[in-house]
Image: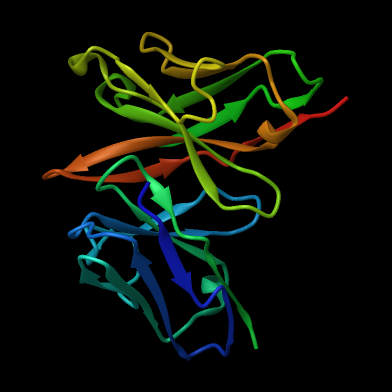
Length: 106
Length: 123
C-alpha cells in the first residue's frame, strides 16, 4: 500500500491567512495526487487533481503543487467557508488517503 | 442536479447483513466507474470496493479487509450502485460514502461524493 502522510494534522488560522498543507507519499506517485475538502455532515469536495489542476468551480485561492513524493496544497487568503478538513489522495495504485488536516479558526 | 445519495445504513448485529444503495442523478451513471469508501469514527478514509462501468465489463475489486464479505454491484437502468455487506463485524462500523470516479487524460479522481450513510455494527 502507498502511505500518505499529511502535515500538520491540524492548524489554526485567521481569515485572510495563507495556509500550506503538505502530503508526503511513501513511494513515488508521479502526479497522481488529488486534494479534497470535507466539512462535517457534507459530501467531500474535489479541489485539485493531477497534483496541480484546479477542479472546475473551485476558487483560485486554492492551488496545488509537487510531484513524486512531496505535494503541497496552498490556500491563499483563507475565507470563512474554508474551515474544514483537507485530505490528499493518491490514484497511482488503489486509492489511499492521507490522515487529514483540520483547519480551524484561530 | 448532479448528486449521489446513499441510503440503507443503520444499526445491525455482528454477523448479520446489510445492503447500502447509492442513487445517482443528473449524469449518465452507466458511463462511470463507482467506488465505496468508509470512515470509521476518529479514523481516516478507507477504500472498500470498486466497480467499473459496463464498457469495462462492470468488473469489481475489493479491499482485503472486506474481500469475500462485501459485494458491489450496479443497476444502470436505475442509476443505482449497491454494496451488499455480509458477516458484518464491529470493525465495519463507519460512515460509508459512495463516489464517482472520473478519468481525465489518465488521471483518476473522485469528483462526486455522497454525504454518507452510517453503519453501526453492535450487539
